[in-house]
Amino acid sequence: MEKETYDRIWNNIIVPIYTNISNNDFYMYFNKSRNKKKIFQKYNIIRDEFKKKYMDDSEVNIDRHKIASVMMAAIEEVYPIKISKKYVFQLWKNKEELDARYVYANETLAFFTALSIIENYKEYGIDGKIELKRKTIVLPETFNESDYAMNTCIDLYFSKRSKNINILTFSNVFFLLEKMSILNDISITTDE
Image (cartoon, rainbow, N blue to C red):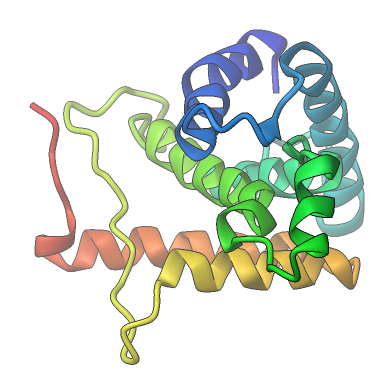
């Protein structure tokens, strides 16, 4: 990924998603300048390792699902969102639990960044020409009424803990989410 492309992803996807997650919460912080550099470096390392391991020609570009999965893994490796230790200690002292929005903040950032990358790269057709309509991926409803995004973030959380974020598996998940949105007419919204 070119630095210019990453800068656009950083400014238009990662930072706005973090701002939404944090909602100006002073227990949550994010060092923008340091994390921007670290995530880009980690992205390039993970991408290069992935290409060497799984691709016949490591010089070929990877598709948007793999780009999104690699970026998601890079964010998970850097773990850029920090929670105030003083706040965590205060909760522990009061025998209270840390709210899930804090526990899974980095996973939320990683997952929604990946989805946004897929949505934004989708505007380019296979032939490299820009399509006229951009489609948005809509997450499926679950059968037990749990939150699909939260379930995926929990999966990502435990995948990181076991050092097993599988780029190919998450690429397939993203492909299927996108395909499901295309096949189910009601799952697609179009920006005019």
